[in-house]
Image 1 (cartoon, one colour):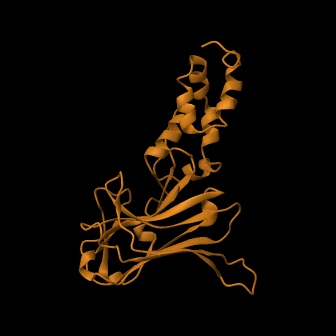
Image 2: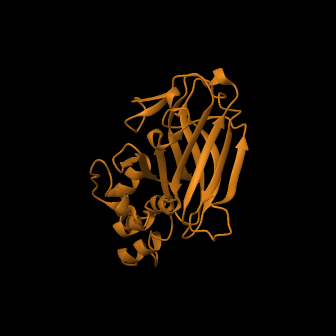
Image 3: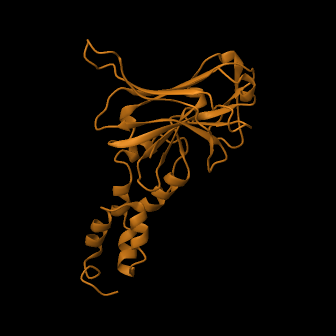
Length: 254
């Protein structure tokens, strides 16, 4: 292919490609050898990574080795990275958009009736321990994440990641998402607003062997302070929850 574009210096083509997306960059590499070389450039994949990726990667439990920024991008999109000690959170990037995705581990969640649960390893979990329901009863699972950790100007979904033999075992559960901000004006409620309230969700199978229920969606704006809090409550169908295992709550872009 011979055109004015392919005659440009590699740095110029790389600059152009960097304003697209990871999937577009991969497709453009098939246009010509010039585009293929430019699409491998670190400049391109640096743009696709979150602005604070270096700070996040520096907190990884195990050192992350990579030769190129493209390799780093692919690793972060394919394999969640355990961060901050590995017991509480994992980090990954969305393969299409490069936006940040976090999972808060079961150990970090507020789970009511602690005596009804025990924590131990699970072969399919990314975390050292997950939560096992050992006594049938009501459940209330609550998690939160700092809004500043999330990608800006992005719609997120919060999903409970779990395992249960019956995919409809939590269908009567109620889920709530709300935004908490300690910096609000004195005459405003600390619980700024309820973003989402739902019931009757069915579980879906994930690619990693777990199930998930979407607890709701919310918008991460530019410069939001405070925390996003989510919870799931189930007080019906007591025996349908037998064998429930909770891995965590995932916050991912949609």
